[in-house]
Image (cartoon, rainbow, N blue to C red; front, side, top):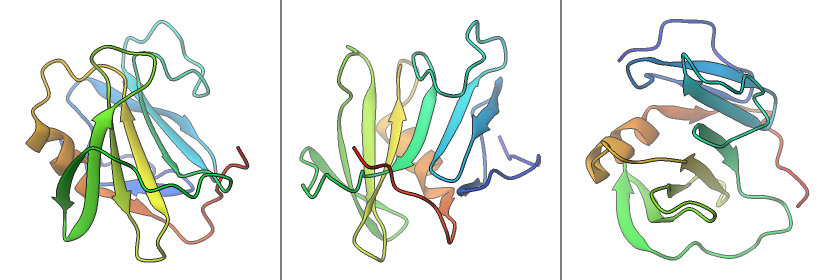
Length: 131
């Protein structure tokens, strides 16, 4: 559904899944969680959606299913530590990959994931983590 709340610092978004909310974020991450999430910390990503950029120390190119995300190259692969989670990597114009990690993609189609990621916009001044 369309997101009409206050936009986070490092990323802006066009929509959130129904029943989900922005839990928190900073200049380098954004966490979206179910409205009734037991864990309210935006730094715990289990059962949530994490949006961030590829870390400064990671110079690899993601591998997996190649996709188009709003005219940008994308790669969909399995998220570490979960059996049903997915990572969607979206290459930004400066060559850095944005990561959209969805802990549990049950009920999401591949197109749902792409459409959601297409509505995420990296803002100037976003910070990349060191590790």
